[in-house]
Image (cartoon, rainbow over all chains, first blue to last red; front, side, top):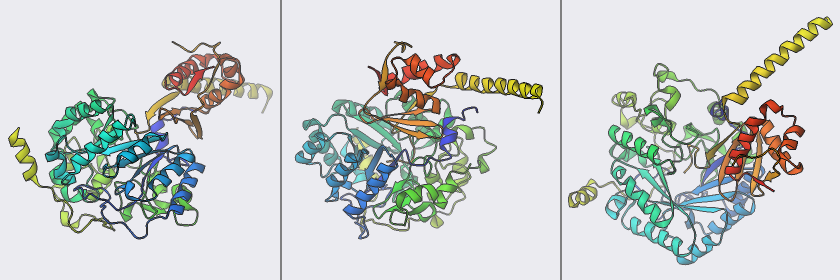
Length: 380
Length: 43
Length: 88
């Protein structure tokens, strides 16, 4: 039989994820404005070390090659190294995402000695003014210090991961230079209105013109990683590298700190909850048999986007982006490059937008302060 | 089915399979590298 | 340099193969590269490489029609670039 386009086959889902995100803890030393997991306070129901290892044993049996560990701040967990080492011992490569606060010189040396381990340092600005406006005072210095320590310890190439906002989009060349200076790999990802991001999305997300700027920049920098998060921009022309499809529930998913399985880390909400690794049958049964994932693996209709010529390229964009701004899933993405999303948004009553079921934020999270950014801009 | 019918059916089948394999050969490469980072829905 | 039909090759020892309905996933633990093998035939050939003296022998053993060999050689080229297969 003729070979169906690979992507069409992957949309039907696989017997095991290709890779997945695992948030180890909701605890975090930071309180970033746009935190997709609304992290801050540890959840008392967190998976134990034994439970975590059992999940890894399952992933080994499923032949998951690689996992992306995050949080919250995963290095806060006292068993962080134990979990990572167990993963690697079970032939599951690890990339972990960190704000760098706990990458001491010792930790850097220990990490440098490990194989099959990748590190991704989060950074959202080229200077403290831009970065700390979103991630909090001192976070820029912390991230840079972690990078310096990894470099000194001979870790080798790590990744620097940026969430693109209205206020850092002009810094993309600078981020590339920064990555080059460390021999690191740059990763540039899309801001979704998820978690605490829902509150600041309208102020932070790139403008239409900036989206065009991002698209052109990514086309000119094909070696920059994107986590395939900009496939909605493919309606602008030549597709960006990557699978260019929503992987949620089909080839990827999220395991959260208390063992709940969601379609992806950007949809931590009941609507996208598939089950729990603590249920009988564990993660494997959730992945293969949950109602949600079965539904997502069914052919999706274009819905309101059916009459738009761009649908094949953009596939209606991102579920998380639509869901948390209150748009229907079978319609345009809020950042639809043809403007259909903006039209639809105009009629939305934001007060009724979905809120995450559990909010692990600390009592006084960072609120985005325009003041900090505009004073740095006026100085330049 | 008569021997002649069977032979005809076999010939038809062979032609059909060859067409489909032509599609496989001509359509796209048999392997494709996608970055492990190239899947949306991951940190 | 194109892979030669009389070359001896093998799966790279740091690569894991995971069969799928469409063919297979190949993951190289060392360089983190992920390759989709888009037909079960390609998977069979990749697995057979190490057991046969030459690429041509592996292709024959897997029942691949000679008409399709150029496409398979192109695939092996690509796999060699990704370090999924290597000369031995």
